Length: 210
Image (cartoon, rainbow, N blue to C red; front, side, top):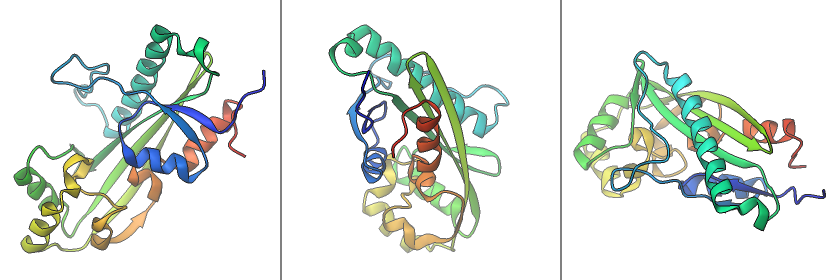
């Protein structure tokens, strides 16, 4: 069967992941998984006791991919459209071994940014690709260092609204780029989808981009 090798299903609401897929020439069909609290979520994102953040990120990415495949089968989309790989991802920001989620308020965002100020933290982004009867995943871990941030800078940054839907309360691809003194690892992984790992998974599943 001749397949269009420039299209995938994307099980993510993140506009940043959409932009990254476009960057490498991939078109996509969006699969919007349910998230709480109004409806039961498709994926329970509660960490296991003692679970390492990197293991958590990879487990959730795989669970999102599995939920996306269930959705496809329920809707019978594979019978309506060509069968493409399904891409899912999860990003976890950690400092001192603790997971830092998305801010729940401006005050919470300020607390997170004060914690990151003048220090290094880790960003674990796992990507999972499901295709036909296979599910593969990979993990990208990067270390990001922030300069010292003043209270005025933090307040001004929060006022832009950029921190509010992002793990760690910042977007490295946006205004927060001026806070970063060093990045060791994958820039795209910190944004939300490690492109090297994604392309290698697709290639491993016989769906190479080039």
